[in-house]
Each structure stands twice: as C-alpha cells, then as structure tokens.
Image (cartoon, rainbow, N blue to C red):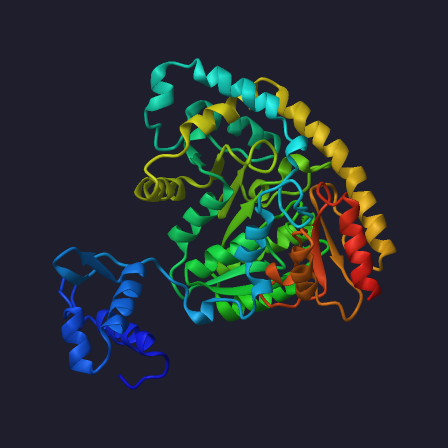
Length: 460
C-alpha cells in the first residue's frame, strides 16, 4: 500500500478499488483485522478504523463474532466530480439548505416561497378537518394510480381557464412539481442526452438534470423569454431531447415569455423534435395571464407541470402533470415503480380548498400584497446601487444586478454569518455568468437588517 494519503485512507482506497472492480464479490468475507494487519505490516488499529469507515460508507457490513463482509447492496449514488459545480456558491443544494434553516430570527430574502403569515393556514385547517370526517377508506387506502379523481376533475377546469383543454384521464397527480419534473426527466432523458434550460433558471432543474447525467446547455434568458436565435442555433448543434422552463413569472428573473417568443420556441421544438416541460407553479400569482406554451401547443409536445406548494401549503405535497396520453401512461407506470402512490390525503385537502372558494380569495389577497412589496424592494435596492433589467408582471421574485466588482457569492457567504440567507446568481446559472446578480423574494425582503447589511457591504 504505497498510495498517497494516510495509512487508513490507503486501506480504504485499496479495498474500495477491489469492490468496485468486482474482485471482491458481494457477501465475500474480508481477512480478519489481525490477518490483514500482519500481512501488510500495519497496526490492527489502522485496519479497524479502515473497516469502520467502509461500514459507514455502506461498502462493508459487520457481523458480530463473524467478521466483515462485502455489502451485497449498492451504496447511495454519488455525483461524479465533473457533475459537481466547482465552487459552493453555484450549488443549488447549498442555497436551499440555508433557506430552510430553522428559526424566526434567520431571514430568508433568497428563498422561493411565501412567508407563513401570507399563507391561508385557516383554509388548510378547515379542509383537514373535513378530510378527517371522510369515510375511513379515504384516509387509509392507497389511491388510484392517476391520483385523486375529484382533484383531477377540478384541475381540468383550472387548465381550461388557461386555454389548455385536457381530460382528467391525461392529468397525473404527483407529490409536488419537483416530483413531476423528476418523473419526466426519468422518462425522456438518458445519460449523456442534451437538455436545454434557461440561463438563469430554477436551480432545482439543474440539480435534477445533474442527477440524471444529462448534458445541460443554458439558453440566455431575456426580458421576453429565452433568446430564440441562440436556441435555434444550439438546437441544430446539440439536438436536445428536452427543454425545461417557466414561461410565466420565471424563476429567478420574474419575466414572462412574450407571444412571439413562445410561437417561435414551439416552431423550433417541432422542427427539432424537442419535448418541453413547462413548469407553471407560479400561475396563481400572475396579475395578467400571459401566453402558455401548453395552450398554444395543446400538449402535443409540451408537458405541463405545477403544484400548490408555493401558493397554498409547502407541507401538503401535491402537484400535477398534464400531457398527451402515451406519455401519461408511461409516467403513471414510472410513478408506481418509484413511489407506489401519491399523497392522497394532501390531494383531498387541496381539492377541498379549491372547491370551497377560499383559494381564489387567498390568491387574490396575495397578488394584492406582492405588487407593492416588489415596488418597495426595487426602490430600496436601487437606492443601494442595484439595477433591474426586468420588471415582472407579479410574482415573488425580482432579479437584481449589483454594481461592477461585487461578487454575490462572497457577499452571500458573509450574509449567512449575519443570519441572512440570500440566493446568489450563479446558483441559477449553468454557465456561471450571473456573478453580479441575485434573486430576491419580495415577500421576505422587508426586514431592515437586510438593507443595513447590504448598505454596509456596498459601502466597504
């Protein structure tokens, strides 16, 4: 064992190599601690520590009085080094982890959801009580493969108001929008396939595609949507199988795709045989309805997804996929293979809130609060020297650019020490060209500590 590293690391590396190379088979017993130590001239404590590390990593199992054996189960999947971002600030998981940090004293101007006091908790409680009075089978039995039928019927009406005609048989209930996008990626994307995303885009898209081993290509996103000239050129060059986007109240920029851009996108997608995932999770925060790719395409190649996590409850995991029949059938099989059934109780809660009229009143109230909040955030940020190229038509986000020379990754790292979780631009940019940008959630960017911190940073 003459490799670099400590003796323990050398032992761990050597055994790992034998396991990965199939020279040690699942279930095979390893030499005893004494035998391995004596045969390699190392201490027994070194072997014990190495074996313990391999057990912790899931490569070995320890059987009392029997010894150590190669684990027959595969360990958890790990991303390859080339799949990981080179620096922490571009890591979507880092951004989400700090946004979820507990405690009311921790401020979250970079998070992607509404504050708790903006949500209609009373409506959820009423719905929960009503569901609790349902027949026992509705609370204890696994639901239908497509999901709760009354909710799918209600969604049919919701989608019709957005110009999307789809029967309940082509609507699949999922455990949120991320689950929906993940299912689509599992179905349509093979390792090495090219997938287009907006640059910048929702950071979860990047995470999901990295796990799928996809080749991710970013398309510059402007005030009216993705740059269709670049999209067309890159589509000829890379032949992508999928494009994932938010067409309305885009995350993180807040922009909405224009009708002209939407039409051209669909023409290119048809010519190049590209499927499109349209994540419409922020639809109910839109002040004026914008164009929907799913409505223009009527789900011929657009797969329409979303959820109620941002607008109703992050705890009730309930989303949807609407797509053409053959894809729904395959997605349903895939869902059953991975989660067996969705959260039936959450689906019943969401359905009751949608049908009793409280959801419409709630979203009306939220929209009325978001507009003045966005204006206030922009005004105060502009006073600090930030600029905003895009004026959103509602929604949670504004996308600000700091003055030249400001690295938001470094700024965000210092903000955490002050109890403030921000969202640096490069967490959303596959090309890492958003160093000076930052996403602000206007519903969470009201505390004076945030502005005092930024003022001090920019003054220094």
